[in-house]
Image (cartoon, rainbow, N blue to C red; front, side, top):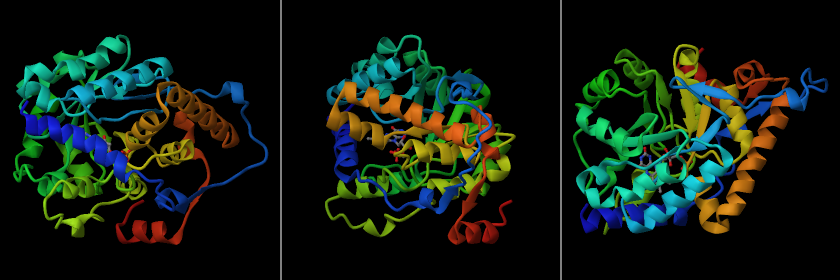
Length: 345
Ligand code: FNR
C-alpha cells in the first residue's frame, strides 16, 4: 500500500476521534419504550443470544468495521480484537482492500484472527471488488462472513475517492453467489432506504446493516482531509439509523437486518432490536472509549452493556432477542410523519 493509503487509514482514525461526540438528542430519543410494572420473565431467564447470516452470537452487538492497513492501525486492531475475545463479541476489520494491494500490511488485519482464533470475524471490502478479491479477503482472516460496504457519499467527497458506482449491484450479486461465505452488505453511516433494501434483496443479499446517520460522519471526515474543505454542504446527507430501521421494517422477517450508526448506549441497542434488528454494530463509540480509557475499561463497559440490555429485556418481558419486537413503544410525531409519507407499515 502506498504511503498515501497508510496516511489515509491513520487520518480516518484520528478524525473519527476528533469529531466524536455524544449525539444528543438523536432519533433514538424519538422512540419511548413503555414501562409495565409486572414483568413476566426473571432476569436469569433472559438470553442475549442472537443469529444472523447463518451464524450464532452470544451478544446482540459487535465491533463494526474500522481499520487496518498501517502500523498504527495494526495496534488498534490488535487491541480491539483482545477486547472482542475477552467479551466474546464478533468483530469486523476495516476494508481489506489496502491489504490486498500491498501484502506488507496484511499483518495489520491478520492480528485480529491471531488474537481471536475462535471468534466470529468479518472481513470487509468495497462493492467494486471482484469475487477473487472477496475470496482473498476471507482467506486472509479465515473470516466467517464478508462485509461489503456501500459508501458513495464518502467516495465523492474523499479527495482520492472513486466516482464510479453503476456496477456495484452487479458485483454484489456475483459476490453473494460465489464468495463461499455469508455476505453482509453495509452502509458506512448514511443509512438505507426501502428501495435500496429491495434492490439488494433482488440480487440475493439476505443480511443488511443499514448503518445510518447519527454517529461517525464520513463526509465530515473526508471533507476535513480536503485542502479547501469545500464540501461541508453535504454533511447532513443521509437517513438516521432509526429512520433506516423504519425503512427496513417490512423486511425484518425475510431478511436479517442489522443496525449501526451512532449507537452509543445499550438502550439504543435495545431500541434497534425492538425495531426488528437482529444485532447492532458499534464502531465510533468503542473506538473512542478504547482510545480514551484503554482495554480493561472497554471490556468492563461492554460487560455493563450486556447487563443493561438484559435488564431492559426483563423489564419488557422479553426472554430472547427474538421477543423484543413485541415490546410496546411509542414513536414521536416526526417518526410517524416519516412512516406516513414513505408509506411504511
Ligand atoms: C469506519 N467504518 C468503516 N466501514 C466499512 O465498512 N469499512 C471500513 O473500512 C470502515 N472504516 C472506518 C474507519 C473508522 C475510523 C470508523 C470510525 C468507521 C464505518 C463503520 O463501520 C460504521 O458503519 C460507521 O462508522 C457508523 O457507525 P458508528 O461509528 O457511528 O458506530
